[in-house]
Length: 124
Image 1 (cartoon, one colour):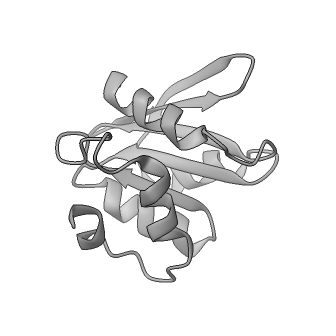
Image 2 (image 1 turned 90 degrees about the vertical axis):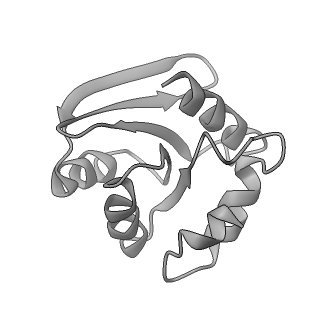
């Protein structure tokens, strides 16, 4: 989760202070979440990777949420679901993205105004 942690930290630079930034570490059966705050990071989980359960966890947050997750086979299914619920999502391929080349805030900008999630744009 270290690579994802770097991506999440970059995503919070210049972020709306009222927005909660959440990093999700998705595995086949379990998910761990970290909430980033100026004062401390909070770790939650592990809990089920079932899409409905992860969505329920994200929607319980008290305020707008930005979700960052590493690209994995099931992360795009979850991303589509969260985006359809108007939750800001970035799926980051930590091996290809080379964060120095394509900062996470650029990926957020690519996704912010899109109604349909298109993971091919992340690879461009």
